[in-house]
Amino acid sequence: MPKLAINGGNKVRSTKFPAYKPIGKEEFDRVREVFESNIFSRFLGCWHEDFFGGPQVREMEKAWAEFFGTKHAISVNSATSALYCAVGAIDTEPLDEIIVSPYTMSASAVAPLIYNAIPVFAEVEPDCFCLDVKSIEEKITDKTRAIIVVDIFGQPYNPQINDLAQKYNIKIIEDCAQAPYAKQDGKFAGTIGDIGLYSLNYHKHIHSGEGGVLVTNDDELANKLRLIRNHAESVVEAKSETDFVNMIGFNYRMTEIEAAIAHEQLKKLPELINERRKNVNYLENELSKIPCLTMPKVRQGAEHAYYVHSILFDEKVVGVHRNKFIDAVKAELMPIELRETEGIKVSGGYCRPLYLLPMFQQKIAYGKNSYPWSASDRKYDYSKGICPVVEDLYYNKLFIHEYIRPGMKKSDLDDVIAAFTKVWENKDEIRD
Image 1 (cartoon, rainbow, N blue to C red):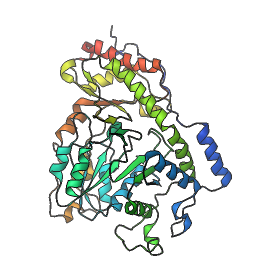
Image 2 (image 1 turned 180 degrees about the horizontal axis):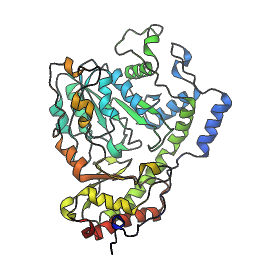
Image 3 (image 1 turned 135 degrees about the vertical axis):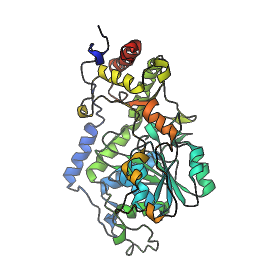
Image 4 (image 1 turned 180 degrees about the vertical axis):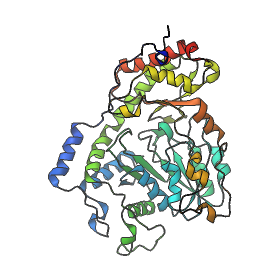
């Protein structure tokens, strides 16, 4: 009789995994304050004291800056908005080039297009999965304005990229959506580049449903970030601004309720990250005994935040492709409460290389005539094969899972270990 659930055997687990619930009484009490104040937003899109938002927004921004040790913290309604603000604030010109990662959420690579700049994809590291330093330098041209680095899966980017940026006089925008409270050489992720940004989306380490925060130590960048967030074009004259570059503003403003929740969530961040690290350590002690699995590398001098747990898979050892092995593991497990519609939270490959999206394959962003690419005298290659490392990770070698979150008991982690161990021990059942 088959032992593996994918072939009809009994599952390792028959009940759902516990939901991740970092929000509690503290957030509820602070939201009650918002309702009692009857102030749900206090932003005005003109030069006025309330241009900077209401009391909850300002208190949260102050607390965020103090926590991460930065001069400025600017709240927005999403990390995507934060990326768009950052690209505008660095005075990006049409047809500038911005180096981006192909192995991340799409907004990190699409952000340059908002200002008619052109994304240029660099390769990622085969072990830490952040942008590769050598590949970045190969992509730098006289048109390069910035690098958008991504602290992927909770791993801070390679600090040698800062040396490149200084050498070529280009800016670094640090997408820290997946790595709050991670550190590199004692510095918080998000504070290592010129502008850093965090996400408060509901599936991040801490959240307010939606939202984002930008940080910087540069006064001029902070000023531009705040202007772009809130209808810059209506403010610059009364504010006596003389620099009008990218001063088309948006409504990227955070509400008082979101700010109130985010403020309380920030206080919980250290404990929540430490619990993730504890869970990962426990899992890795056991999963590392399975010969086809290699645990993720943590860069020297880094402290990982573990947005997800990324693991490398060796098909040669097991004689089965990663996808078949992972499908068998998933059949042994159950969904997570409140996220049942997302299925089993183990997946092969993470996201498909972003240059394979139709936008880049067709080179169509604005209008039907391939703008902005058609306006450039340079050729940009987004064909399959331009980043072989990331393609190998996506199609063959890497998988991620989310059964590391706070709230997981030892017995829950033991079930995850048992599922992987069971499939390894019965691998003959899934071999061709």
